[in-house]
View (cartoon, helix red, strand yellow):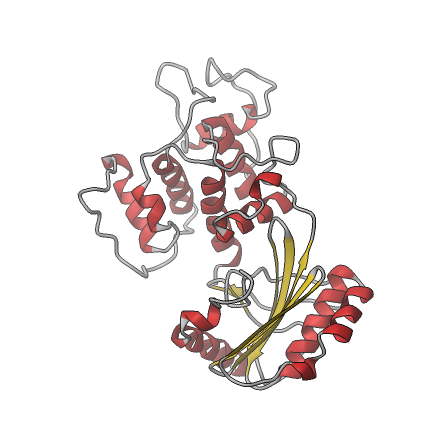
Length: 344
């Protein structure tokens, strides 16, 4: 019960924290432990108990018996890996030691020692409403405090995975692609390129969706004249057609190389969540579809249901009838996948 109270307290406090504390306006553009952090298993000696709640990693793997609530997370972007440890209360030493343990688990003892030597905890105070950024070589050390929360983090730079995602304008999209890439769900187009702004095709969506949701590919049945056996997308298209999530033109053609609109991707995701009883209960918002937002009638209900449950960004609602791009579809599906993986 004490852990439950701690979790509730963290959530209530975060709701009251000014965004300037969570997303610092100065210093490097870094994610922080309140923001879509991935809770990781650090090996046999460092098991992470608990789940992630609404993007918040909860319960600390190194101090599970403490009276405070601590969290640890790792996030990978195209050009760096970011690890942060934070918690509720004044236990800055626990947060700092948790960070060192996480860095050592991922990068080895030399990286952990580098942080101890160059960013000693005593150099960073525990004052409220304080933000500190310090950079040495490939390391950027952060300390954040506010509203009884403490957080230490380190960003470790690395060679970019995709050259065309260097300094990408939307960090959320960047993180989504790298997360999906790390899980073997998305790949580039070769030569260290991702082609983020290219329009995604119907065949690519079928493959991406089945991989993301762990749906086994279907056997070849010749459902479509233009989807022969033996192509990389054949099994995915056959399965999506079997499940009724994607259809052809009624005359036996699927048009695998054609683009697909955002709204049609929203529709197939909605059908999947509905059929497997995965739609979040209740709603956390309302969508008033303005006259200038053009939506086809067959997707209106699906988009409303997903948006009211915070599974679609408003910018994508506005662009619903436009052809989807590779990076925006990846970001949307990654958000849906994270909800499914970490729902309470």
